[in-house]
Image 1 (cartoon, one colour):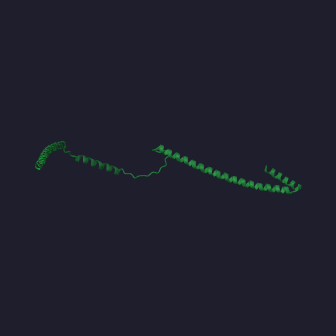
Image 2 (image 1 turned 45 degrees about the vertical axis):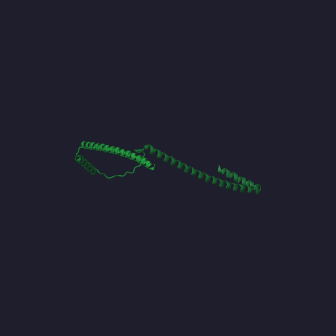
Image 3 (image 1 turned 135 degrees about the horizontal axis):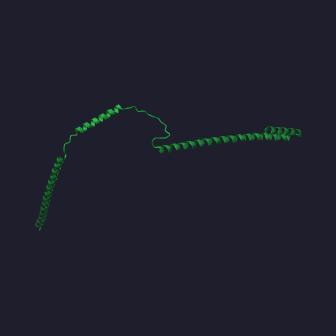
Length: 175
């Protein structure tokens, strides 16, 4: 029985080997066909390249280009002028006028605003100083008035009469 099993397995393996050999043979044939096709394609490509590429003499073109570039260099050297730097202030610019005027008008607006703020601060400062001075004068006036009233209360009738005359004369001189 074991002999039969071994024979059966060996026969099976033999069949598989035959199938593998057949597939290897088929692959070899396919590879040789591909090689033949590739070589035929390469031959056609070589023949096409050989037929299409005529030899062109580029020397005259190169000579013409070099002589023209040399002539241009000579002309540039003959006409070379010194570079002059110009510092200009333009009210009406040649290029980008819209952007220029937006920047300038914004600058003018901010400068005007800054000037107005400075003037308002100085006016406010002056007003505060004037108010302080008026207050000091009122305090001084109140001191004189209180002193006058104090002396007026302490005086007799004749002294009060003299004080009233002095007050009237000073009032008339002011007007």
